[in-house]
Length: 62
Image (cartoon, rainbow, N blue to C red; front, side, top):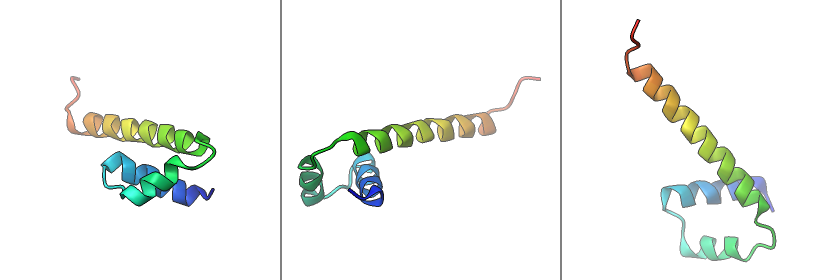
């Protein structure tokens, strides 16, 4: 299992643009752990980016 392939698959699934053939290929993989690890990392990064944008855009009360 190539990590780049897993990353592309998880990103496509997160945005809802993954093809049916790739989805079927992913579900026939023997180990789900790489997909879970990359998925958790991407969700955490997404939350961090959103928090940083909110903190950047909203004014602070000084």
